[in-house]
Length: 59
Image 1 (cartoon, helix red, strand yellow):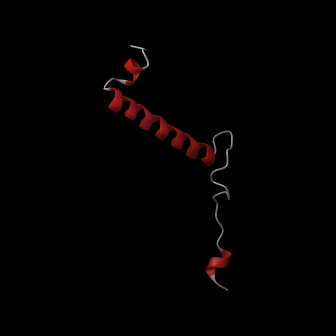
Image 2 (spheres, helix red, strand yellow):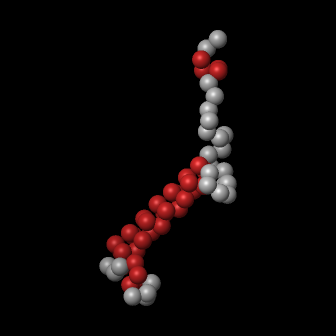
Image 3 (cartoon, one colour):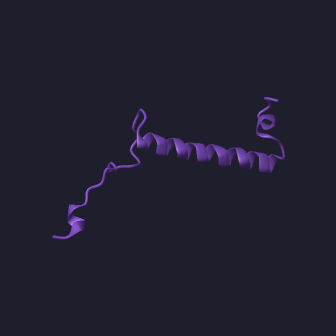
């Protein structure tokens, strides 16, 4: 028997599943959405030559 047939994983099958609560899947989605937000704010500041809060008229 080979070791590859016996290996088991503690990681759930679907790492992209949308799960509520403090689960590894929720933390993966949290990181993805945070990256999208950070890149969006950076692009707004880059292309508008204003800060993010000035762009939205908050300051």
